[in-house]
Structure formats: C-alpha cells, structure tokens
Length: 125
Image (cartoon, rainbow, N blue to C red; front, side, top):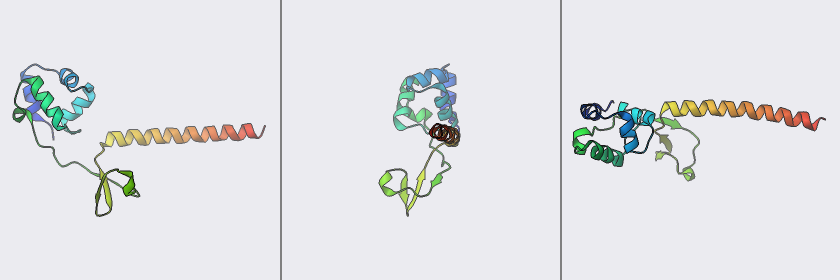
C-alpha cells in the first residue's frame, strides 16, 4: 500500500526522497521502498519524517497493509527467529531480499565446488 499521504505532503513541501532518506539515516532506494509500501516504516521513522516535514505524524501516517508472509520450515524455537504460531515460524522478508540471498547462495555453492575440485587436484599431485 503506497503511502499517499506521506508522498503528497513531501511533494507539496518540495522535499526529495533523498532528503527524507538522509533525515532517517537510510539510503534513497530503501526510503523509496518505504514510501511505496514495499518496506515497513517503523514508528520512530514516522516521527522523524513528521519532524523533518514539520507536520503532525497524523498528517502523514498510514496503517501498514497486511503483507505477504514467508513460511520457514525446520526452524527450532531456540533460533529466536520468527514468531511461533502453533509450531509454525513466520518472517516478513521482502521478496527482493530473499531472491538476492538465493542468488548469493548459488554463487557460493559454485565457488565451493570449484574450490573442492582444486583441493582434490592438489591432493592428487
């Protein structure tokens, strides 16, 4: 859910996304995802943004929409990860982060395989 109230106030005041990003100590791409509703805006960020825009929080705040929840199997309760709901664990992780991590894992698997082959070649010398 796009943060229309926030975007409208920001634009009306002639403030750029970069300026807001700097005010809440994040990069502009992350702020852009927050304003577009892809990433949650934390309470303290709402407050900082309101102060920066010189408006009450109520003038820009919009409730977070229910988000897609990713399900993780085989996570033990001692991990401290996710929320235990009837033995299931859930975590709100944006899909672009998951995809990035999947790509990295594949790259590391290939690199590990290559290194294993090099080790075997050295052992056989």
